[in-house]
Image 1 (cartoon, one colour):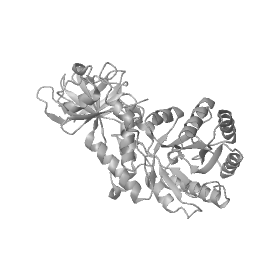
Image 2 (cartoon, helix red, strand yellow):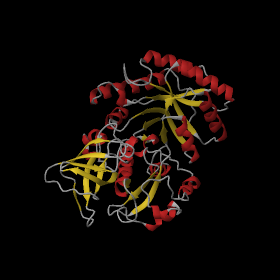
Image 3 (cartoon, helix red, strand yellow):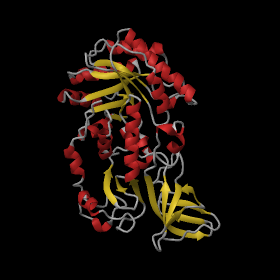
Image 4 (cartoon, helix red, strand yellow):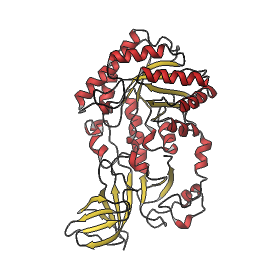
Length: 433
């Protein structure tokens, strides 16, 4: 499966950014250095002047996770377009592409703009776009770059009407590739609810010269009361929809080398997605079976630790949590109470509270498990820690917090150090939320 890479010039430009007040946690004494210069110094996260709180990514866990999903996708004959909204980090996109990704998934046209600024050539836009200004810009990008591939959702005849009108107004010369989004069921998020309505949307696409139907897609995690059997049933509807459209000749406009796109697969059910896609009957053209899991790149210590499909299929691999938010104990006002200097502005908290994992002594740098410590709540800039009787913790100690939900962890940090197991910082990941 051919893959693309980010344009090296904008990526190289990230290393030329200078350290300043924008980037929390970075050493104040490094003010004015470029990020490339700072990375070359290989400072210690703990003794190199970094201030707390500071979010770090494990160099080893990142590489492990990238390799694991590359192996899994290849073993199951899947193309892979990881969802970029997880990290919004072009440096990680480049590593995902280097590890076999077909392209990068986006949720919004603003994401596509950032991706294009870093030269991403294949983008799967998992949303219906009805914003005329965004469609004008997308038409311009497609017309200006014959090598740019964009696939986006349609989920209504009205949406098709708005897209067609905006693209006509923009004078689009290339038709925009679209997939019909099959909704995950009554009460689920977006997507067409019934196969009959899917046919109506496909008919509307066929009547619009500015659009070209290339496949079907959806998001199985939105299946109500999702479990393996419900997700499997919905996936069979999706593959049957693709086969039905093909039998009806709805992909006849595709070129000789074009593929029919069938896409699903978040981070919780990609095993079931792979299972059902493997049973897809032969169609009139090759099929691009496109998986879109995004959270795998950092994994986590909460939501996805509990829900990763590798819990069901451990023989096929495992993911490692890459995030650690290091904060310091700044108050011990009562025997059973402590406060850290990290809160809602620093840590994901929409699914689970952070989890204390390791304590690093402020006295001698020794580490120990965070036994007896529990985060009970978060203020804007403080974590409330319940300290069990007998647990050792004093002001100045560093506490490593495991986080739940990568998407709302990345977005709180414009710059994230990448640290090796001994704390040596080797790189800095820039995010663009």
